[in-house]
Image (cartoon, rainbow, N blue to C red; front, side):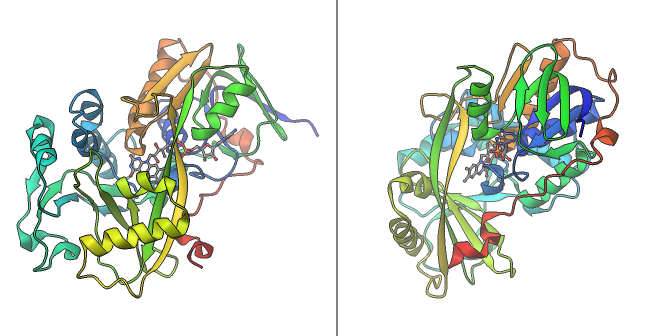
Length: 393
Ligand SMILES: Cc1cc2nc3c(=O)[nH]c(=O)nc-3n(C[C@H](O)[C@H](O)[C@H](O)COP(=O)(O)OP(=O)(O)OC[C@H]3O[C@@H](n4cnc5c(N)ncnc54)[C@H](O)[C@@H]3O)c2cc1C
């Protein structure tokens, strides 16, 4: 059987939030683009994300009220415009799990808190909350801390993947790359399909390293930072927020989701997940029980089930630290992108488009590839971790 051959402006490899946002943005701008996903949409980091649209709180906690914090400061507003159907993409169908998060201190904190509030950026983003407005999980006479409202929405990641896939307009293909080259044009061969593109966009998260190697490239270099997340399900009240500790990172970050039967699941990140990479699953669950028992002694944990999830963040190499920016770099018709954060996907996509335009790739020159892709396998959406029932046994 002869393969279908299509000429496009760009082929995007990877259907996580970075690739999907780029596809939607490029299509909206009139570019002819195809996204190739090897597995399922969001299968890497995106399906494991907490869905927080960071506005800089995490960065300010580390004292980095400079570049990194400024970079993300505009993200909540940019996403809110999209979520309202008025932004660069129409994401009005995406459920917002929480319009705002909270930041809480369990009490007795010293310099870290003072430094945090000294940052101008944070002063403008935080509002102290009266006890009546606290989330139910913190509303207890024994809670001695303080609570602020934080201007960071939390989106439903499954809904986000679905909406972005819809904006891809039939230009998504599932398949393993058999062969690829970075020339003029760049070529990508899948079973039954050959794509020739002015630019190749590598948006494959941790998969970018192997793709670069296949192209015979040693750079850009990638880093992985490990996490050991915890999930706990049971009769828990909804909570979205960061707990302040004495370390530069949030002591605990909690988001709330539902399992396949609609039961609440708390998904726990922050320092617990960072320090937990050294622990085995049983040790990590013990640590989580101790942490939640200390922070919420008034909640009943006896009926809860526990599970953990190991996952890596894949980013441009930055000495093992959080990179200070979106990474988006072009090298001989190949653009490599790591958004660094889900929240930064709009910025990453804007930079991809900027590189296309700067390189003279103009929209409108090539036809919409969707009709030519009609017979190709379409990637479905990866299940979120707490929906995988086998994790709970
Ligand atoms: C536990 C956790 C929680 C997080 N929480 C948040 C949060 O709350 N807020 C936030 O802003 N950020 C968060 N992040 C960071 C965020 O998830 C990532 O920055 C973002 O999802 C990266 O998206 P991506 O598209 O670059 O990569 P990925 O989501 O990893 O997607 C890469 C895709 O490429 C595909 N792929 C791989 N190789 C190939 C290939 N050869 N060909 C084709 N396709 C390929 C994969 O199957 C995958 O679908 C979190 C990260 C983790 C790990």
